[in-house]
Amino acid sequence: MPSAQELPKTPDGALKRLLAGNDRLLANQALHPQTLDGIRQHATGQAPYAQVFGCADSRVPVEAVFDEDFGDVFVTRTAGNVLADPTIGTIEYGVVALGTPLIMVLGHQSCGAVKAAVEAMKDRSKLPSGALGALVSALVPAAREAQARGGDIYAAALEVHIRKVVKTLQDNKAFAEPIAQGKLRVVGASYDLATAKVTMYE
Image (tube, rainbow, N blue to C red):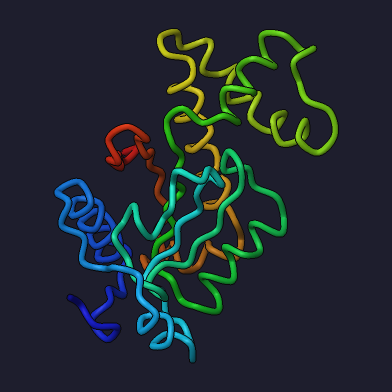
């Protein structure tokens, strides 16, 4: 099992380790059972090698998806991977303060927020009220773009939205220099609830 000193420091190394962890999960060969000793070992500080911006869905626990331990991955989650300033600030913290070289935006198939956005696009009366409505509204542009593509609108809307989030983060001024220097990479991916497989959006 890699030690903390052996955690990757480059974007490519971080991505390779994340995907290797998902491969272990798929092979039912996980290396990182969660233990009280593990909690205690990481109590004095953190040095995550990557960060994942995921969906809040309870079926997508990031550490389990990538077979990682306490302290290895800096995780931010919102329903439907919807960005807002405090969320972007959290992701910035992961880069600026913790030095994570990789940001993975991880959506998932059968996302309820994406489904709600598609339904609201088709019928405005189905848009929820209040803050939940604002969240769903943030996904409607992706649903509209996906509709024009044809095919599976839900999978397409998810991909469109994840790519938009990746682009938003890539354009963040706080990330411009590390991206230009090759010290930071922002990527998008999708998690399949039925198979547990993570697929990159190239």
